[in-house]
Length: 361
Length: 173
Image 1 (cartoon, chains in turn cyan, green):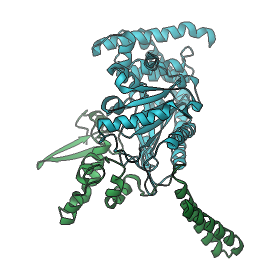
Image 2 (image 1 turned 120 degrees about the vertical axis):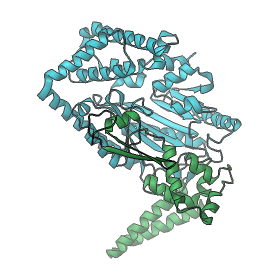
Image 3 (image 1 turned 120 degrees about the horizontal axis):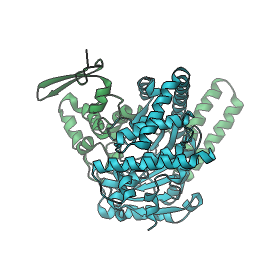
Image 4 (image 1 turned 180 degrees about the vertical axis):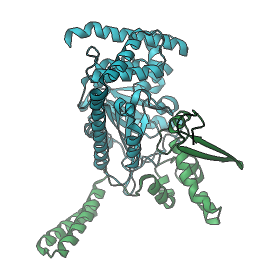
């Protein structure tokens, strides 16, 4: 079945193309929330009502102008196994909420997986666009275009004063959540991160860790997003996030330069140790993997590990998640077994990369 | 003061919990607080946004259960049946009509969450023509005022004509 394509490959095609400032910004994402007028929000909808909303919105996805943007495929949540759902969550293609709590849930994905349109999540429609690197403006332009396509066919719940009406009052107005995923190892190492992140929260932005519901920032990955959706235009929101992210990128780059100048040997030692451990260890838990992979990524970005391509690291980030591991090895695993398998997989990936790597770098 | 958790770093966060009159105090450092997942302002995911919201909503009724307040709590959305009390517990609306039904209570809430109560962003293309016109008229009126103050009557007249044109357009829609 075709849906397996979305769950087999760890790295979505959109991730492979790179993008501006990829050494600091992994990806840029814009999500907009929309609802249909005269339909209760998914939380209160009956199964029948959810089904109607799903059918109406997937129809827009199948017919018409969406195809001008790319090739899209509709996947019903009811057709997916628990493991498939988990893998899609780990790839950030669907939200945990859609995977676990939705009724009449569906997702419309394009072929490079840069667009994910979720139906019957917390809101009827959630359009998500992902771009590699620092391209938040581009992500908004695409999301807004897709929004127009749906709006041409569906009656949105829109209020002159409040804007786009959403299930949660934290999304009302523009319904937009824009975010950038950043790798900030040098700011963490030089202990500037708390100062910077607390400044970020003071200008109306939020910070959270990757894969983190309630967990700390694993692997020095931080997601920075807007909090306010009402009272500012989308462009103001995007510009604000863009400006702040730009400054953080500069701080991170400056910190990396300083690390190289002042303690090159220490950094070299740190990244090489992590590289050594990852390419030889027999047991690797997810927390250690995240930290070591962050070191290796830093080493690769600084040119200290010329044989490692950043793409392999993006791939490993997803591949070493529990759901994806089970998918790869096609077996149910205890956490202990996962740690063996994770170590095995990382070894293979890193060594494979070294074998081929020398030729074309 | 040293962190009670790790005993190493200085404690920078001080919590006082009062449950059924029993008071407990914590003094911990930021690192340990993060691990424990205690709610630090600005720290991610320490508790769900919905519980946070319902905290904001409860805040309104801390003046004691006055009669007016009880009346307010009994408000029910005619469209989906959600009561205001339910909304303030789960922090989510049941349908788009709830925004109208609970309108009186929303301004203070939205002000706290967003610092604002009025949408300034995108307008739907198909259904939003009228709103677009209204916004343009508002802007033109402000411009017009400025032109008059500067005694630029010629350009003010042009603006006035444009406003009339838009007003006719709204009437036709």
